[in-house]
Length: 257
Length: 259
Image (cartoon, rainbow over all chains, first blue to last red):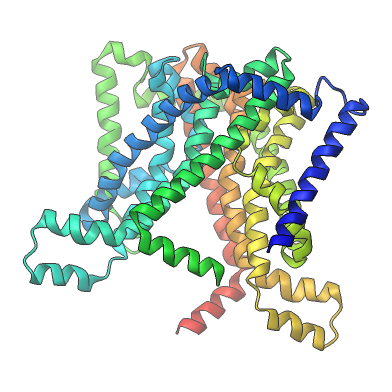
């Protein structure tokens, strides 16, 4: 395992060295691909001056608002639709009509309603995270073991008690899947909506740097996004392990096997 | 899609109720009409745009870019995925590079593509290929790895050539995973094409929708949104139809195993 990681790391370093050398030799246009060392230098400057952290903070506020709002609306709705066949049938057609819509197409609609404000991005993220959250929650509730529900009934658990203590824990792995799938969607949509209609945020920062031909800044912004994506994923894993330790254990053991 | 047997009355009536509420709400409040024109006007606008041929032109451009990007990405994703899945040492080498590139939201590549390729078809297709390759690649690698190694060993024992092992054992064995990757990629490709058209385009449905929004033609904008939704739906259906044809052998097998 160690040696394999080492080989990969060496390959990565070799790639980086190749990049640096070809850029230094000006084999590629330095206006398109600058030296790697320059990009890293600019990245460091932008991080230490607080410019990149500032933009990321702006983006993350929007992203988190949309994401959490979607979770607050669509997980309860999913539980409801999973439990009641009637509600499910009543809403099914509307959901199936809206779902195939590629989320970026909602950006102009949101622009029309909210202009360049934060609400525009929040709405777009809310809309695009809705479907994975909703459908996974419905699935989770529907695949519930009926013995559990009957047991709850036998013990005369109240409706709220049943939902809180039986249904939610049993459906939580699938709900977690919905939340996990939504995470990269959230990040993609905040970047797109900032590219199309914004005056700040990391998506705007990257596109603006390209338009002003500040190419090193553009690459630095992309590097920041990659780190952000990685960090978000790690954070989610941490939460998953904390909230559902039994399920996390099951998942990782299966992966190893 | 549970209502295959009986017509979902409740579902369709709630959709019609929603559309009616839209129509009446928009008609009764003038202030709302700027944002939300009555649905009848949206339908009228779609009809006019279609007759004028405008919407059809934009849709065609978007579809061409979509298919170009999707097919190239499928070719790259499946072939590279098989290579990386089969040769462990190769995967060990580039695995870290993949892990490094993957968490970056794919749309961040758009500015780089504009810089390298300018504004136009090749940029949009390139961006689509980049983003669409990932799910196909990752799923193909997974698929090849999940093949029972006894199968490959049996093939070798019988002296099958490398090509026949590839075509008759690895590809069919990995195909359920590959199909999953291709299906996920479908939605991603459409997202990337429309996004790239919004950020830097002068044609295509993404451009059209954003352009109509900027000139405050909200009926036309909604008409564009409806067309994209219909396109997404149709592409998904087409994929499912193709899948059930190509993968028929497998459905039979699974049914037999579970029976």
